[in-house]
Length: 237
Image 1 (tube, rainbow, N blue to C red):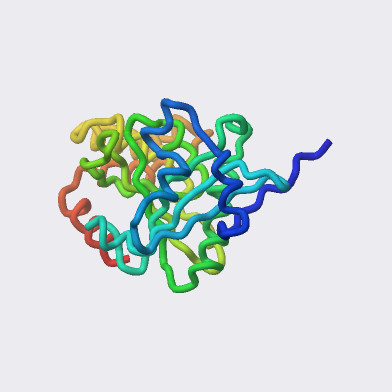
Image 2 (cartoon, rainbow, N blue to C red):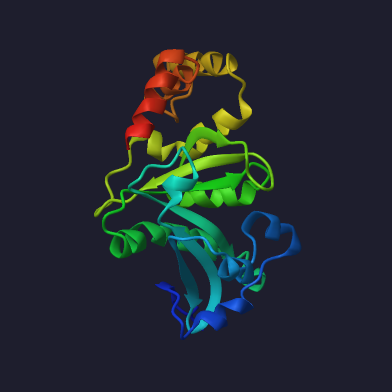
């Protein structure tokens, strides 16, 4: 029997109560909170959205239209993704990644003036980090140290009318994110040089010539001017 369709839609007064059934494990509450807590918040600029599997509510998230007024790293034309959760009984089925992949077109439709969606994800939540990267978010390389459950990575997805052909950096963004989190500064330059040499000498022919530009980008992570340029470029978006 085929799985029912997964859809996203704004939560209305008519179906608001249905999403109170969406819950996560006790360990996940510290990262996402609960639907009841989201409903009870008095924050302005918040829209509630539901995730459906057929006719069954299976997930929830908030879109913060005033994210830029709460967080200094956000741009005034960007949205904030908050309180994203998939019901505990429906986890492990790949639904979270499907939702994240659908977010770009969905948000572009409902918020046509927005240029990007930004989120913070706890450093101690590797499953969520992988999900966001796989679904189309970029790890900005910046962190937010004031998360309620600890330091957080800052991630961003541009909202475009049509998906562009992925660049080399986009294609290998999980690798770059892994390098930023696991390879100390100083060692990144060494790793980049090894990749460049590998591309030139061709001792890994299966990987190919792309090792040279990949190595340049890894090595550049240790160049102060490059990091400043990247930070300024991100702030202008």
